[in-house]
Length: 582
Image 1 (cartoon, rainbow, N blue to C red):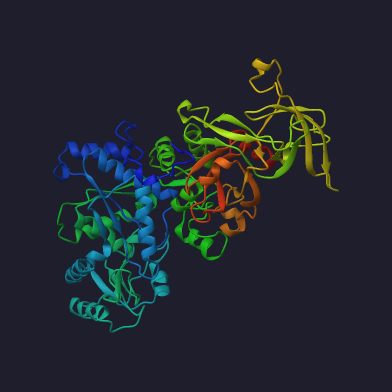
Image 2: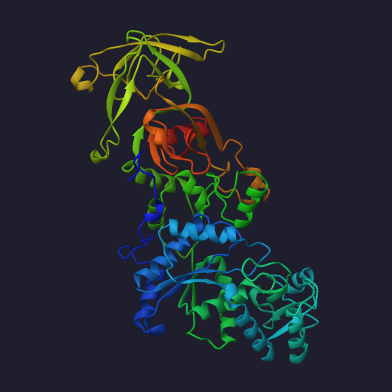
């Protein structure tokens, strides 16, 4: 439970990913249950979460994490965290460390089972030589463009490479020369010899090794040839004794190749089984690391952890609790077919989770002075208000009530539009936790914006409507002008203006749908004094404004910066109506 005086420590989240033992049995768990009952793999269950360290994880990965770690835990097995680090040009130690932090943040622990595909480079090379000796792999001198040309299409078979008939001896000599650095980058590849007429394009002599002189973040310059993902992935599963290789549906067409490669080697621990599930897609979001990297590198966002990004680091910085993400994953379940989930379901889950667990505070985001003319200058009354009406154990706090307050600029209108119940001359409203005040007049600028609002208060009006025998239609939040703190508040909207930014109807360029109004940074906001010790990561509900989190990067002593996590329900409804022109 969040408290203003206790920093959030998400590392203390227990390791209980979504889809616990009491969750409904999905098709993946049914398969694993059947395999265990049949005695396959001697009843062992070993899964793996195998990210490529070429970017930070996004919320789509959280589904895979929850499935891989969750199933292993439910069946008394283990889940390996393995980095499939076969592309040194894109991989960095920053991503390795970030991924480990994200997995821990979600509440998962790999224990001693941390592995890297790069640990297996020597074994993979030996297996590749063995496949060459079988006559099932060859060295090809076609360029990358020529390989694509020879590959064919979905309706036309491919053509065999003119180098496909090289002898085993020549192929071995050339492959060893590739390893020794005798040829320039891209000059040659090692390709599996399968079937250039196969309906599945992945079986049309796929590349197993490329020459790539790039310093690897773990092996340095020890290698100048690197295995393809398809070649390294299944063999790494085999080395680690993985029993169930669970992956998203885009790898379904790769399964025949996964199995073909396993057929060519002597399996050290039994045969892994690849099973696919539907990936997580969200509206108003892109889930491609390549596209997310483009957003970062092209300056559309402030970094991988920008709170508008669907990365786990961005969601964490924005204030999404890991428990709420796991609850969201439980609710959407595990399916065999891809679909797109409305992002509002995620927001609703976060909002529901935070409602009973966050302290309420008052923060005025667009302040205007409110003067209570019949309250003496210098008088301060400390008013007790509940930290969280949903949680009596959260206790009370004291808020200073003074002659000069700040309220929201939008809480005054003159003349008032139809249905407006807040401040205007002659109208009475309640100040949250305090008194009824009646607006008498206001001073405004040349455009009619209020500069200073004047009111009188009723000293006998502190209490409920039943207690004082009077009811008003609006309750406003406020802070003391004298005691309030200054802060910055960042309001976030969807990063894209359309629900499906990858739809070809947008010209095929997701960048054209980036929302220029996705961030509104408000400076000069006024915050109640109880927030003076707010720690980075602490979450609060700002009365009437939504749920907010202390920014973990930019907030520091003397500078408070808050990110809006999610709006309140009624605020969301108003935003939607405004978008639809209602």
